[in-house]
Length: 154
Image 1 (cartoon, rainbow, N blue to C red):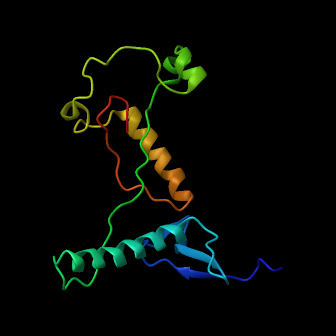
Image 2 (image 1 turned 30 degrees about the vertical axis):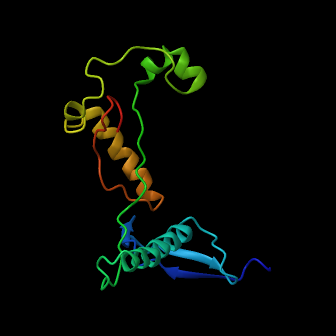
């Protein structure tokens, strides 16, 4: 068919990994016309643009004019709140709107030192481990598990 002409290339910016005793090699897919047919190619193209325009910026503002590369260390960080199902079912705002509309500030509020640097509780750690295993099956390794500033946010 006319859509079958596509190319794959090894994405060397992502590490290979073994899952279920199979070596998984991250790839990018594009059509013969250069259109991306995956979710990774736009990210790789964005990194190329950051590199090109970053070097141009440094040259124009006369800082590090001899720089040869710009490396971006940004990535997706999915954050979410973990709420026990029984507590969720008691909250009409969460059930109907999917977000908090009523309530009061937590006792500790959003004091970063108390939440961000605290160890994960065992239930959350187990949940994040299970989510990590599922994400890895999709080819998306999770690098870090930690609390966020707000209570229940990870």
